Image 1 (cartoon, rainbow, N blue to C red):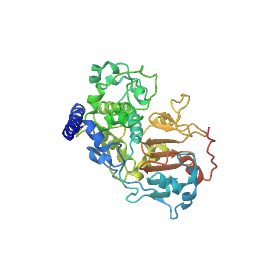
Image 2 (image 1 turned 180 degrees about the vertical axis):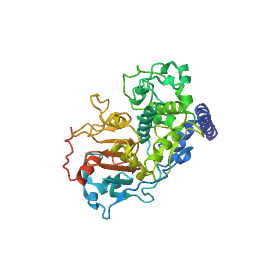
Image 3 (image 1 turned 90 degrees about the vertical axis):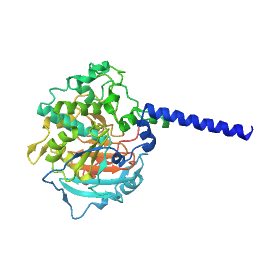
Image 4 (image 1 turned 45 degrees about the horizontal axis):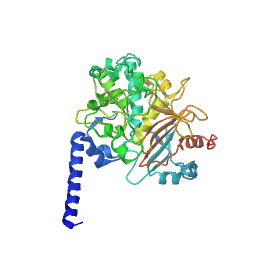
Length: 399
């Protein structure tokens, strides 16, 4: 083939690629963000607008033990391949940034990677969903929302333009059984690029995207883990309370539990909607105070911040049949929390991508916060809480 012809073919292909990508980004501008940032990390939130959540006027301080429990470094826990490894190796292999263990209001163990401390602001990704559950409990207690059985369109009338929302209730959203179409990021690079997971994380207009979503299952019938249900709950909360998610959270939760640092909610655009599925930023020590609030059944300094009934309802399955069974602990997703069903019951967690965790164990009065770059792929928290309380623990045998 003559060199001139070859060069023309190469140039034409290059031009075609430019035209295709140009048309693609013009059609869906958020795809440029997907290409630029790809899988977000714990600091990607800095690239987007934030709604500030101001700290408490009066700070609560956990007691710090004079002698930390360094023996935890050698405690054997399971990694992602179900191998028993010293926790120190678990920390390193999972690229953990922070690990904070609190029992009876005392910090017994803390470990940080370079550049991290208990006051480093970090995105907890899907851990944000549990914060939405807290807000919903408060809004119900305040009478801002009358019932979980109310339809979403009662609070967001503009959604009536989309027949997919006609029968969806607030409870359907809370249970992640809206029936709305949602494509996760699993299945390869191309699927991740065009996934709804990426779209709702990177879009500059979540409301516009939600107005176009389709219904694929009857509401209340099929559980599917997805971002749009808690995003819709955030929108419902804003409509019901007349305040932004950040304002309502700050006034009714954050300022009332002794927080030491400001937090933030990530927005799709300036003065836009909060991404209540995956963009809540918090420090380790203050996330532990959220755990403390729930450990104390919604009370802080003898004052009921969240109804005790809501805390119990959110963190116990009761007679409900689990819709999911994640990990060896068979965690069920319920009221936007993860509740282990293997062995003894009672502990629960808020969990986010890449290994962000808030774990609460009422049996041992323990709170554990973990921030990570990727996580080591397992669930060491129950073993650690029982070990520090001097209680026996045994991993179940692999099936």
